[in-house]
Amino acid sequence: MGLIHSVRLFAAMLLVFAAALWIAPVAAQPLSPDVPLKIVAFGDSLTAGYGLPAQDAFPAKLERALKAKGINVEIENAGVSGDTASGGLSRIDWSIPDGTDAVILELGANDMLRGIDPKVTRAALDSILAKLKERNIAVLLCGMRAAPNLGGEYARGFESIFDDLTRKYDVVFYPFFLDGVATQAKLALRDGLHPNAAGVDAIVAGIMPKVEELIARLGRNKSRS
Image (cartoon, rainbow, N blue to C red; front, side):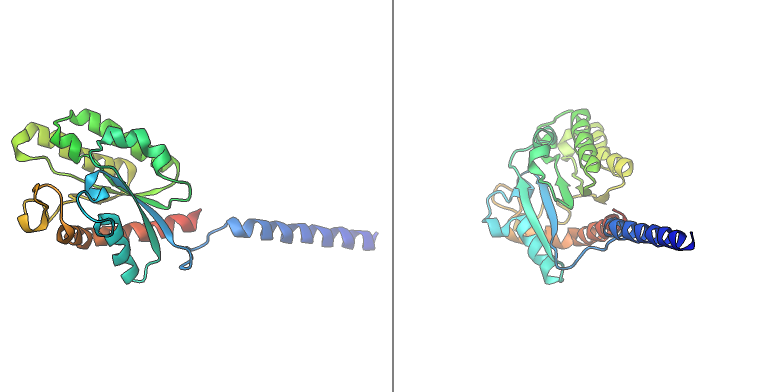
């Protein structure tokens, strides 16, 4: 009986050890520097790089800037010129591939320029953020300012969208994507609306601390998965 008991005890210990080995790979694991972070820049013409060579678009310049800091990252350009928040919602499921770690969400400028009811914009961005949260994808939300000619009531209704959704979904927030670039003629194309290559450089420099915050948060999120 003593021998049988010992064999049973040894078998039980093996089962516990095997279970530990099975569970271990699923437990907390830090991000490997050898595996590039997959980030999708999801937005409108400001993201797409309207009027610019592909290498001068925001996603490409941001990727190079991050790599210069030693961060292994790949940033996909999922910007569509003319897109509204509702347009983004209609393509979010197939524009963000499996394996995406984070999204830089930049939409709303065309809604504002077209005077679309802020309630419509809010609902679309809310749905986009809900879908990304469901997929456990970290988000950097980029805000937009309303043009002065639209009036104070519209501006308050529009600009509050980004603050409110930031709090609701606890995402990283960059209040104004065109900060330091808007109204600066030397940083814009001839249309006065879209940034030129120097303007994109200014955007990348301004948003960089928030992108680094996103990546830091991403590392924490991944370590919990």
